[in-house]
Length: 281
Image 1 (cartoon, rainbow, N blue to C red):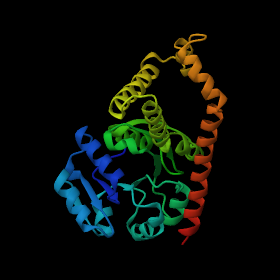
Image 2: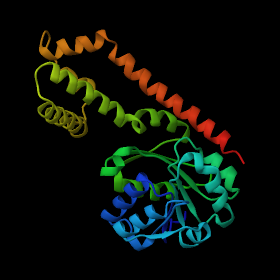
Image 3: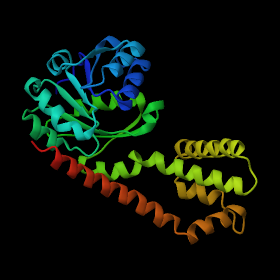
Image 4: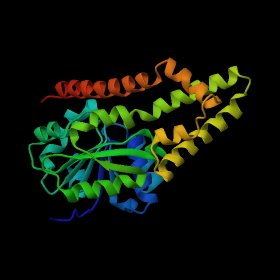
């Protein structure tokens, strides 16, 4: 099996995910800035900003982007997928590798649009990529090999952790970890409000909540105990924790979380199908 020979990494799109990936790759020495090429369809100011900040190269020509890159990251808005794929299609070969971070857009749709046997890996990161803590899932398309998956995993490990899954799981994963940060932010909002109602100032509450979440995450990660085991260890019968958990059970906390993740996953699937219908050539 051939190893993926990385010459240059090209980005089609210059938004926040592109910047997070660039920063991660450069800081982790995955690639040097001169081997990163970025193209953005309309915003020349944004390209100049990234070029100045990171020392990367920028272009506004699809043919030149594909000529100078053998790894292409699709990072434009999903609604612009059809136009973007149409612009690169004449210049793609099976020697390129496409990495797609387009939410909801399947590899089969991209393969059908470009009409080549170009390997495609679909990726679902989350917004914590901005600080190097993304929880990312990756899945291969029809022509991608284990080597393409391995290369993509190493790339995304520069901005967090990575798991390999089958593509049909990505909508559910979008509901779980793709949207996941927002669930925790909402929980923090609620905890801050509860703290204020109980006489704790917001600054103190925020500090305590963040450390509590961080500590709980580290306990899960470093002890390898199941969450239920850790919960039971800190829950004494008739104690304060039990009193709080009883209220969560009363208000159907588990059912709410399950419905939340399930509905977000369903919406991801719906939006993907809608985008593919909209973007149909």
